[in-house]
Length: 102
Image (cartoon, rainbow, N blue to C red; front, side, top):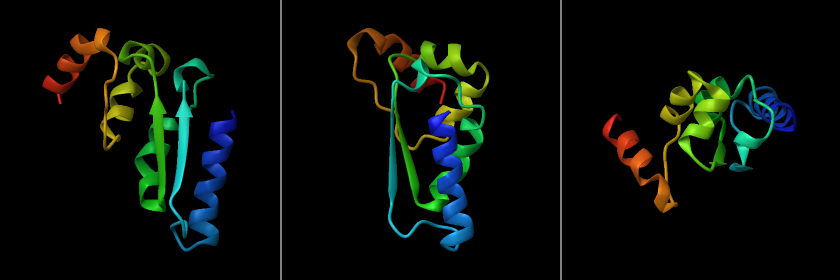
């Protein structure tokens, strides 16, 4: 709920108070985003916040964790991420499949 309210408030500030874009880049670090309650507006937020000078960094354990939490929206969320970085050796099989399908 915190992330949803925070993103909503920052989008409001950017669009209503700052002429469409925040004056300073805001970087939201969303560590363990799959271990908190689902953010219902995340797919749409990710698609729109970049133009408002807002960046969001996700840290997740695996793609399957994201898919379990966001189901069909997981692919849309990943598609709106400019950089996808895999750091754990055990997920190389997921990473190679993900990269091949992009």
